Image (cartoon, rainbow, N blue to C red):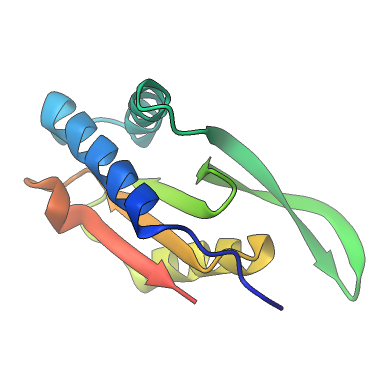
Length: 127
């Protein structure tokens, strides 16, 4: 299966948006606050994004009637997982990689807003 690619220019703009949010709000807030603020920032930049998108799961070609929820999907090519944690774990990485596989996206980012500098909280994930 051919994975959906995202342009580096779009990724750079999305990471700029996350940095703007972090600069304005700092660390220590709930993930939902950063998610809502990032959606506002992306909209202001003219970047199409959806929040809390259901990702259906199928097994042996049958929909299980269950779904994950991706925090933010940008331009139908990039999944963002918003975190406000002490550190990103292997479980967080597995989570976003599963989302990428289910969506068919090559790229994803974990954005951990609980860091002193946003650049320390950006984790690029490619499959």
